[in-house]
Amino acid sequence: MAGGGHGGGGSMRWLLTYADMITLLMVFFIVLFAMASVDKQKYAALARSLQIAISGGSGILPGTTGQDGSGTGTAELPMPADLPVLPGRPAAPPTAGAAVPPGALPEEDPLVRLGRDLAITLKGEGRFAVYTSERGVVLSLVGTALFGPGEVSIRPEARPLLHAIADRLRGIPNDVSVEGSADDRPINTPMFPSNWELSVRRATEVVRYFTEVEGLDPRRFIAVGYAEFRPAFDNSTPEGRARNRRVDIVILREHYRVGLDTHVTATGQETVPGAIQEPAAPSGVQEPAP
Image (cartoon, rainbow, N blue to C red; front, side, top):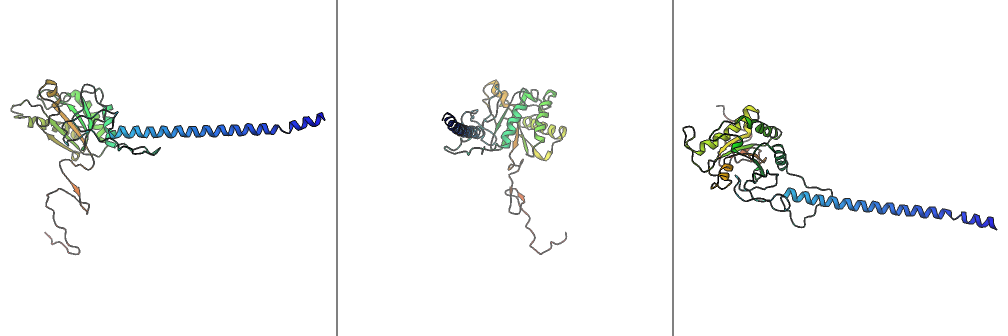
Protein backbone atom coordinates (compact mmCIF):
# COMPACT_ATOMS: atom_id res chain seq x y z
CA MET A 1 0.00 0.00 0.00
CA ALA A 2 2.84 2.34 0.89
CA GLY A 3 4.58 1.59 -2.41
CA GLY A 4 1.41 2.24 -4.38
CA GLY A 5 0.88 5.57 -2.64
CA HIS A 6 4.40 6.63 -3.40
CA GLY A 7 4.04 5.73 -7.08
CA GLY A 8 0.81 7.70 -7.34
CA GLY A 9 2.48 10.86 -5.97
CA GLY A 10 5.34 10.56 -8.45
CA SER A 11 2.96 10.29 -11.41
CA MET A 12 1.63 13.81 -10.68
CA ARG A 13 5.00 15.55 -10.78
CA TRP A 14 4.63 16.32 -14.49
CA LEU A 15 1.82 18.69 -13.61
CA LEU A 16 4.23 20.87 -11.65
CA THR A 17 6.65 21.00 -14.59
CA TYR A 18 3.79 21.75 -16.99
CA ALA A 19 2.47 24.54 -14.75
CA ASP A 20 5.94 26.07 -14.47
CA MET A 21 6.35 26.01 -18.26
CA ILE A 22 2.95 27.64 -18.85
CA THR A 23 3.74 30.33 -16.29
CA LEU A 24 7.12 31.09 -17.89
CA LEU A 25 5.58 31.28 -21.37
CA MET A 26 2.92 33.67 -20.12
CA VAL A 27 5.53 35.90 -18.50
CA PHE A 28 7.65 35.77 -21.68
CA PHE A 29 4.79 36.95 -23.91
CA ILE A 30 3.80 39.66 -21.43
CA VAL A 31 7.37 40.99 -21.51
CA LEU A 32 7.41 40.91 -25.34
CA PHE A 33 4.12 42.79 -25.49
CA ALA A 34 5.33 45.40 -23.00
CA MET A 35 8.57 45.94 -24.95
CA ALA A 36 6.69 46.33 -28.22
CA SER A 37 4.36 48.91 -26.68
CA VAL A 38 7.22 50.98 -25.26
CA ASP A 39 9.12 51.00 -28.58
CA LYS A 40 6.02 52.07 -30.46
CA GLN A 41 5.46 54.98 -28.12
CA LYS A 42 9.11 55.99 -28.30
CA TYR A 43 9.12 55.99 -32.09
CA ALA A 44 5.88 57.97 -32.23
CA ALA A 45 7.27 60.57 -29.82
CA LEU A 46 10.52 60.76 -31.80
CA ALA A 47 8.62 61.22 -35.05
CA ARG A 48 6.52 64.02 -33.58
CA SER A 49 9.52 65.84 -32.15
CA LEU A 50 11.42 65.62 -35.44
CA GLN A 51 8.42 66.86 -37.39
CA ILE A 52 8.09 69.87 -35.09
CA ALA A 53 11.81 70.62 -35.27
CA ILE A 54 11.99 70.44 -39.06
CA SER A 55 8.75 72.36 -39.63
CA GLY A 56 9.77 75.25 -37.40
CA GLY A 57 7.21 74.70 -34.65
CA SER A 58 7.44 75.73 -31.04
CA GLY A 59 10.39 74.55 -29.01
CA ILE A 60 12.99 75.44 -31.67
CA LEU A 61 14.62 78.83 -32.13
CA PRO A 62 11.84 81.41 -32.63
CA GLY A 63 11.59 83.20 -35.96
CA THR A 64 12.13 86.92 -36.26
CA THR A 65 10.44 89.46 -38.43
CA GLY A 66 12.18 91.70 -40.96
CA GLN A 67 13.36 91.78 -44.57
CA ASP A 68 15.07 89.04 -46.51
CA GLY A 69 15.66 89.24 -50.21
CA SER A 70 12.62 87.01 -50.68
CA GLY A 71 10.67 88.44 -47.77
CA THR A 72 10.44 85.17 -45.86
CA GLY A 73 12.62 82.95 -43.74
CA THR A 74 12.91 80.94 -40.56
CA ALA A 75 15.28 80.84 -37.61
CA GLU A 76 15.57 77.06 -37.67
CA LEU A 77 19.35 76.82 -37.61
CA PRO A 78 21.82 77.25 -34.73
CA MET A 79 22.90 80.86 -34.37
CA PRO A 80 25.94 82.44 -32.67
CA ALA A 81 25.01 84.18 -29.44
CA ASP A 82 26.50 87.53 -30.51
CA LEU A 83 24.61 87.83 -33.80
CA PRO A 84 20.81 87.47 -33.88
CA VAL A 85 19.08 85.81 -36.77
CA LEU A 86 18.57 87.99 -39.81
CA PRO A 87 15.04 88.88 -40.88
CA GLY A 88 12.49 86.31 -41.82
CA ARG A 89 9.01 84.98 -41.22
CA PRO A 90 8.52 81.93 -38.98
CA ALA A 91 7.50 78.77 -40.76
CA ALA A 92 3.96 77.46 -40.25
CA PRO A 93 3.64 74.89 -37.46
CA PRO A 94 2.65 71.31 -38.29
CA THR A 95 -1.02 70.67 -38.98
CA ALA A 96 -2.86 70.03 -35.73
CA GLY A 97 -3.86 66.44 -35.26
CA ALA A 98 -1.67 65.12 -38.07
CA ALA A 99 -0.62 61.61 -37.19
CA VAL A 100 2.84 60.28 -37.96
CA PRO A 101 2.87 56.48 -38.35
CA PRO A 102 5.43 54.74 -36.15
CA GLY A 103 8.68 54.37 -38.07
CA ALA A 104 7.61 56.83 -40.80
CA LEU A 105 9.84 59.74 -39.83
CA PRO A 106 9.57 62.97 -41.91
CA GLU A 107 12.39 63.64 -44.37
CA GLU A 108 14.61 66.64 -43.63
CA ASP A 109 14.98 69.37 -46.24
CA PRO A 110 18.50 68.91 -47.71
CA LEU A 111 19.11 72.67 -47.62
CA VAL A 112 18.09 72.85 -43.95
CA ARG A 113 20.56 70.07 -43.25
CA LEU A 114 23.21 71.97 -45.25
CA GLY A 115 22.50 75.09 -43.20
CA ARG A 116 22.99 73.20 -39.96
CA ASP A 117 26.24 71.74 -41.28
CA LEU A 118 27.46 75.21 -42.23
CA ALA A 119 26.60 76.60 -38.80
CA ILE A 120 28.58 73.80 -37.15
CA THR A 121 31.50 74.06 -39.60
CA LEU A 122 31.85 77.84 -39.26
CA LYS A 123 31.40 78.03 -35.49
CA GLY A 124 34.20 80.15 -34.09
CA GLU A 125 35.22 81.50 -37.52
CA GLY A 126 33.77 84.98 -36.97
CA ARG A 127 30.47 86.82 -36.86
CA PHE A 128 27.92 85.16 -39.10
CA ALA A 129 24.30 84.06 -39.24
CA VAL A 130 22.68 81.10 -40.98
CA TYR A 131 18.96 80.94 -41.65
CA THR A 132 16.48 79.61 -44.20
CA SER A 133 14.23 81.53 -46.57
CA GLU A 134 11.94 80.74 -49.48
CA ARG A 135 14.93 81.10 -51.81
CA GLY A 136 17.13 78.70 -49.86
CA VAL A 137 19.78 78.87 -47.14
CA VAL A 138 21.28 82.29 -46.37
CA LEU A 139 24.76 82.56 -44.88
CA SER A 140 25.20 86.17 -43.77
CA LEU A 141 28.74 87.36 -43.02
CA VAL A 142 29.37 90.66 -41.25
CA GLY A 143 31.54 92.82 -43.51
CA THR A 144 34.41 93.10 -41.03
CA ALA A 145 34.82 89.32 -41.19
CA LEU A 146 35.88 89.68 -44.85
CA PHE A 147 37.00 93.27 -45.53
CA GLY A 148 38.69 96.21 -43.89
CA PRO A 149 36.79 99.53 -43.51
CA GLY A 150 35.97 100.95 -46.96
CA GLU A 151 37.99 98.21 -48.67
CA VAL A 152 37.08 95.48 -51.16
CA SER A 153 40.14 93.24 -50.96
CA ILE A 154 39.44 90.06 -48.99
CA ARG A 155 41.50 89.97 -45.81
CA PRO A 156 44.02 87.09 -45.72
CA GLU A 157 42.61 85.85 -42.40
CA ALA A 158 39.16 85.54 -44.04
CA ARG A 159 40.32 83.05 -46.65
CA PRO A 160 40.04 79.96 -44.39
CA LEU A 161 36.44 80.95 -43.72
CA LEU A 162 35.63 81.26 -47.43
CA HIS A 163 37.52 78.04 -48.13
CA ALA A 164 35.32 76.17 -45.64
CA ILE A 165 32.22 77.58 -47.34
CA ALA A 166 33.57 76.64 -50.78
CA ASP A 167 34.06 73.05 -49.64
CA ARG A 168 30.35 72.87 -48.80
CA LEU A 169 29.36 74.48 -52.10
CA ARG A 170 31.53 72.01 -53.99
CA GLY A 171 29.37 69.10 -52.92
CA ILE A 172 26.04 70.51 -54.17
CA PRO A 173 24.74 71.59 -57.59
CA ASN A 174 22.69 74.60 -56.40
CA ASP A 175 23.21 78.08 -57.81
CA VAL A 176 24.51 80.77 -55.45
CA SER A 177 23.66 84.47 -55.18
CA VAL A 178 26.28 86.60 -53.40
CA GLU A 179 24.72 89.86 -52.21
CA GLY A 180 26.55 92.85 -50.76
CA SER A 181 24.93 95.44 -48.49
CA ALA A 182 26.10 98.64 -46.77
CA ASP A 183 24.91 100.87 -43.95
CA ASP A 184 23.16 104.20 -44.58
CA ARG A 185 26.27 106.38 -44.27
CA PRO A 186 27.24 107.74 -47.70
CA ILE A 187 30.63 107.05 -49.22
CA ASN A 188 32.19 109.32 -51.81
CA THR A 189 35.63 108.32 -53.05
CA PRO A 190 37.10 108.21 -56.56
CA MET A 191 36.81 104.42 -56.52
CA PHE A 192 33.40 104.24 -54.84
CA PRO A 193 31.18 107.26 -55.59
CA SER A 194 28.32 105.60 -53.68
CA ASN A 195 27.39 102.53 -51.67
CA TRP A 196 26.18 100.88 -54.88
CA GLU A 197 29.74 100.49 -56.15
CA LEU A 198 31.06 99.40 -52.75
CA SER A 199 28.39 96.74 -52.13
CA VAL A 200 28.48 95.18 -55.58
CA ARG A 201 32.30 95.20 -55.65
CA ARG A 202 32.47 93.30 -52.36
CA ALA A 203 29.99 90.74 -53.65
CA THR A 204 32.03 90.43 -56.84
CA GLU A 205 35.25 89.84 -54.89
CA VAL A 206 33.63 86.94 -53.02
CA VAL A 207 32.36 85.44 -56.29
CA ARG A 208 35.82 85.78 -57.83
CA TYR A 209 37.36 84.01 -54.85
CA PHE A 210 34.94 81.09 -55.20
CA THR A 211 35.41 80.79 -58.96
CA GLU A 212 39.06 81.77 -59.51
CA VAL A 213 40.71 80.55 -56.31
CA GLU A 214 38.46 77.63 -55.37
CA GLY A 215 37.65 76.63 -58.96
CA LEU A 216 33.86 76.52 -58.58
CA ASP A 217 31.72 76.75 -61.73
CA PRO A 218 31.20 80.48 -62.55
CA ARG A 219 27.83 79.69 -64.15
CA ARG A 220 26.44 78.94 -60.70
CA PHE A 221 27.11 82.42 -59.30
CA ILE A 222 25.73 85.93 -59.46
CA ALA A 223 27.02 89.05 -57.68
CA VAL A 224 24.45 91.58 -56.45
CA GLY A 225 24.82 94.93 -54.69
CA TYR A 226 21.98 96.46 -52.67
CA ALA A 227 23.84 99.55 -51.37
CA GLU A 228 22.09 100.72 -48.17
CA PHE A 229 18.58 99.77 -49.32
CA ARG A 230 18.30 96.29 -47.78
CA PRO A 231 19.00 96.95 -44.08
CA ALA A 232 18.61 93.98 -41.75
CA PHE A 233 19.12 96.02 -38.57
CA ASP A 234 18.44 99.51 -37.28
CA ASN A 235 20.95 101.98 -38.72
CA SER A 236 20.49 104.36 -35.77
CA THR A 237 23.05 102.47 -33.65
CA PRO A 238 26.72 101.71 -34.36
CA GLU A 239 26.07 98.00 -33.80
CA GLY A 240 23.16 98.01 -36.27
CA ARG A 241 25.22 99.80 -38.91
CA ALA A 242 28.07 97.34 -38.43
CA ARG A 243 25.72 94.40 -38.99
CA ASN A 244 24.18 96.01 -42.06
CA ARG A 245 27.63 96.06 -43.67
CA ARG A 246 27.47 92.44 -44.71
CA VAL A 247 27.74 89.90 -47.52
CA ASP A 248 24.94 87.35 -47.85
CA ILE A 249 25.71 84.05 -49.57
CA VAL A 250 22.36 82.62 -50.66
CA ILE A 251 22.37 78.94 -51.65
CA LEU A 252 19.33 78.84 -53.90
CA ARG A 253 16.76 76.09 -54.07
CA GLU A 254 16.76 74.04 -57.27
CA HIS A 255 13.80 75.86 -58.86
CA TYR A 256 15.63 79.21 -58.61
CA ARG A 257 18.20 80.23 -61.20
CA VAL A 258 20.71 83.01 -60.71
CA GLY A 259 19.55 86.21 -62.34
CA LEU A 260 16.74 84.59 -64.34
CA ASP A 261 13.09 83.83 -63.64
CA THR A 262 12.91 80.67 -65.74
CA HIS A 263 10.38 77.95 -66.23
CA VAL A 264 10.28 74.77 -68.28
CA THR A 265 7.95 74.51 -71.27
CA ALA A 266 6.12 71.41 -72.43
CA THR A 267 9.03 70.66 -74.78
CA GLY A 268 11.50 70.81 -71.91
CA GLN A 269 13.04 74.13 -72.99
CA GLU A 270 13.77 76.73 -70.35
CA THR A 271 12.29 80.13 -71.18
CA VAL A 272 12.42 83.57 -69.63
CA PRO A 273 8.99 85.27 -69.29
CA GLY A 274 8.68 88.00 -71.91
CA ALA A 275 11.46 86.62 -74.11
CA ILE A 276 10.83 86.29 -77.86
CA GLN A 277 11.17 82.72 -79.06
CA GLU A 278 11.95 81.52 -82.55
CA PRO A 279 8.98 79.54 -83.96
CA ALA A 280 9.80 75.88 -84.53
CA ALA A 281 9.90 74.68 -88.14
CA PRO A 282 6.77 72.69 -89.17
CA SER A 283 7.19 68.94 -89.18
CA GLY A 284 8.56 67.64 -92.47
CA VAL A 285 9.60 71.11 -93.74
CA GLN A 286 13.30 71.84 -94.05
CA GLU A 287 14.57 75.27 -93.07
CA PRO A 288 16.26 77.19 -95.92
CA ALA A 289 20.02 77.36 -95.83
CA PRO A 290 21.37 80.69 -94.55
